[in-house]
Amino acid sequence: MEKEQRLPLLYQLISSVMKKKAIVCVDDESIILDSLGEQIKNIFGDEYLYESAENAEEGLEVIEELTKEEIDVLVIVSDWLMPGKKGDEFLIDVHKKFPRIIKVMLTGQADEEAINNAIKNAELHAYISKPWSAGDLERVIKTGLSKIENKG
Image (cartoon, rainbow, N blue to C red; front, side):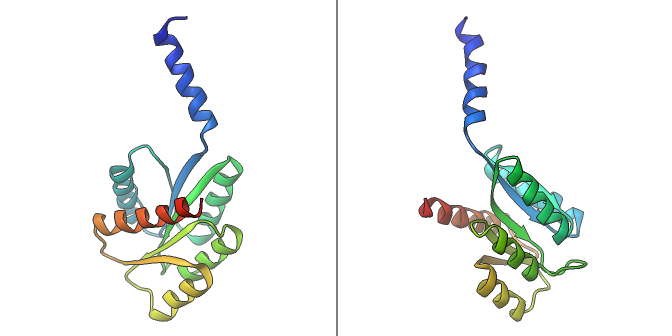
């Protein structure tokens, strides 16, 4: 077998052995999800899968499905003001089932009580106000990822 033919097989083997990793964003506004997805891809390239959901229920389903597919969800970025369940309660639910996921709240609507609730009961990593900057998003996600690496 020629070297050129072996390399793709080697890459396939390596990628199948390496556990895939994902970042999930939850927001009821599709324009926000599109913007987050674009910024995350600009920051990380193909290093992580990017998945999105438009409400808390769908967000939990996405995380559970990724987990079943042996994809490690590392970070979740969630809005606070969404139809149905609010972001702090959603992140608490996520924390109960998936405590290792780094949780970030991105919103212009959350009150101090909701943020404190998420800090206390969901180990909220960070809170970012809308409108956000790509730099803030990058810093918050990277510091969250470094927490995971440090836990080993």
